[in-house]
Image 1 (cartoon, rainbow, N blue to C red):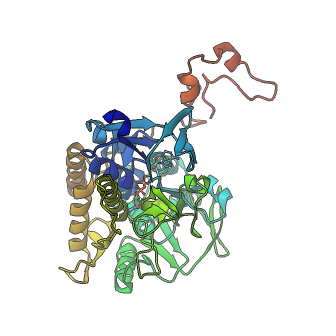
Image 2: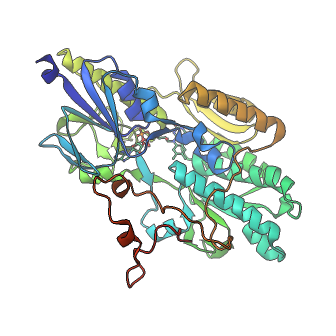
Image 3: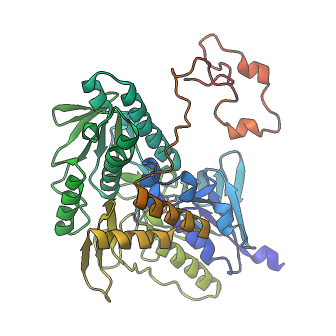
Length: 470
Ligand SMILES: Cc1cc2nc3c(=O)[nH]c(=O)nc-3n(C[C@H](O)[C@H](O)[C@H](O)COP(=O)(O)OP(=O)(O)OC[C@H]3O[C@@H](n4cnc5c(N)ncnc54)[C@H](O)[C@@H]3O)c2cc1C
């Protein structure tokens, strides 16, 4: 009987917000189900280090199961939530599962926003997932390998040109890291290439970098990037992205890699809930993080638009916001079960920081105890290292990341310089083996007939999955 009365909390998303919520509910008298389409929690602030071969993917991600799997009241499901029926209090997970909930916590995060230029997504790499980071890393490394074989100096320079679009923290971090990777690490190992051949262009439409920071720190970041020979274009607009590179205003810049670090928008699930959204597609929530008009549904982190009481601006899309909201929602659910009223959410803003490269970073705190403190250069960089190690989940990951950083600092080396993608046109023999993993077909109770699946249709569709398409 007691079992039947236990409330079921479903959390969509095992990111910063969702995972904190699940952890904070570990001892609450509820059943918890965490549903994520990935099997891992990802520490996105260090994605740019995977993209620039500084860290291996496994150092910044942990299986969701290993974080909350030991909680007796928590179950983890890997799958994409496709539909939510708010009236019936049920949701569907791709592949057919249906879950009923008493409380729903939507923590599905954000996705790359191309601001209506969706065709650019084919040539400009977003940075939101491990797959994105690995694709950028492979493309950058391949550009160097190709340049080493290139005899035409003009073409070689194009191959070693990298364009980063967006002068926010991600763009600044990517531009600095690509420049260091190219000029310091790779150019040393490629004997026909000179560091002077490497060109990194950072384009920002606004008049300064790092808009959320104080202007003084934006200027420090600009100086630090220029010291790394990054070409910073402020107040300039990208008008096209194509297979040869990007057009900046009227100038074509031929580049081997274009990185899109210009913005994010709420995960697509927000659009399918039928609730009130803001102009950026985020779910409008009340001061306690509950979805407007739905006291049993919470939205937290990047997918939520939370405007604190008495303010006009929504809270920013930052990990500490998601983490604090996750904990807050767990507390409110536990309070309600004890028949206590809910409390509003208050964000404790500890400050923001961005790293630009070795010994280079900017940081500003806003803690009452420290007042408004601005840091730049080595001190900011050391604070950045410390905070990121602190927030990284898992002792093993902390140790590996710290070790990698010390090693890279001493040697300028980058350990994760592997290209594992199948490079079309490079092999005499096509790669054999199963094609991309289709989880539905792979583990279906009644798998499709293999021979039929390999029979190419007249239009070429359904060709053998054993020969990987180039
Ligand atoms: C490159 C980069 C650098 C960043 N740097 C910083 C930084 O330095 N400092 C900082 O504070 N913040 C930084 N951020 C922002 C920070 O990562 C986000 O604010 C934070 O991740 C938001 O947490 P969340 O829980 O809302 O979403 P996320 O952590 O993104 O988690 C969302 C989860 O939901 C899952 N999901 C999505 N849709 C579905 C679905 N339909 N069904 C099932 N699962 C789903 C996803 O797989 C994901 O695991 C950075 C972000 C990026 C991309």
